[in-house]
Length: 69
Image 1: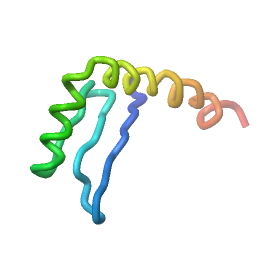
Image 2 (image 1 turned 180 degrees about the horizontal axis):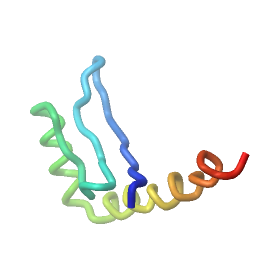
Image 3 (image 1 turned 90 degrees about the horizontal axis):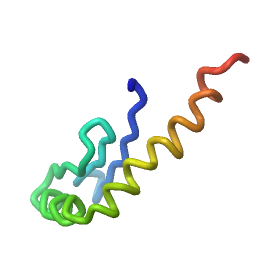
Image 4 (image 1 turned 60 degrees about the horizontal axis):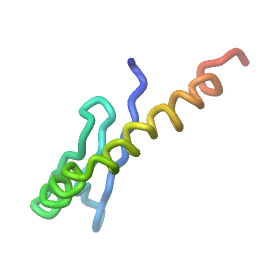
């Protein structure tokens, strides 16, 4: 449960929105980012893909980072 997948989207060096696997949805940090996050959060297929990224990317590689040397 302590493994977290975060995908951030930036424009002009400013983070506009982010997906956090602990939150389970997109969060917007600018006006445009909030609008985009609302659109993405309505699409259940995008949310399902992003939640699956935690298992695909993070949990698959945790043995490499924390495994025996």
